Image: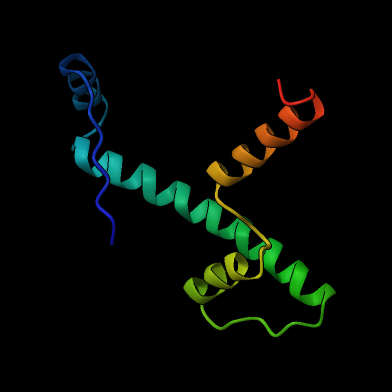
Length: 95
């Protein structure tokens, strides 16, 4: 399981202490919720792809997310951005 470290200023910490009972819990919940939403999007794309191509769907949420990556249904945002920039550079003549 990866550890994610976030740095904020003292003022930002005070602001979050004002808004939440626990800054750490707030950060954990924000990341967990965003991951859940992204997982739902990934699974939806996977189900559509598997149904359209008669592919057996993996069993379980984690397995389905992994299957979506393995089948190339989804990719990381960093890879998508790099491919977009490469295409843009190619269209502009490699400038």
